[in-house]
Image (cartoon, rainbow, N blue to C red; front, top):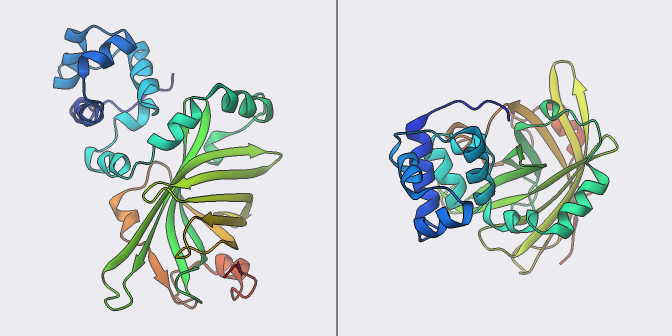
Length: 274
């Protein structure tokens, strides 16, 4: 197993948060076959689990060991946003595991070239003519690459106030030098989105350009298909600093990378169904 940055206090707090949402610590210990006294030491921050027990605990909650040692505030944001619950159930299905293993396992995939945080740019289907900047993160969870991304929309009447927040979580499948994504919106649980991307290097910058399609169950979020540009920001998970930059912007905003706008164009080719 890859080494993790050991922050005992953070691990204990994050583990307590997860257990609070499960109800019975005794039931958890029985299911994962770890002694209750030993588990209590993990919860109190007195001990860090062995590599084997850490893997058992991470697998039970559908997370990677590294995520369990995240900053507690950032970890709570992820958990409260329900990023992991829906797709962890899907990932546990033997049919899905078999499907993914047939197309992904055995390929020589360099995770380091993919994992990390990206700025995600696309034309907004809500604010017509404006560019939406969201935060997109790819990470490894157990045998699969997964991702999540967060969208924030300001209020029409008070632009400094956030009106809507949408959070998506899903699977990332690298196949034939392309990246395929499948995710669900985890706040309203009423939208599926699909994407396909190709990596592009411009100078020292890392981009992925592709197409995303979304289908919602409400008329508020109309079905759409649009170009998407991903600009690599750095390793790790989405932080508060990343979250501060999420909004919609005029297409001439200088903070949008030139390469992203060249790919997105003027938005006239965005497909929407009324």
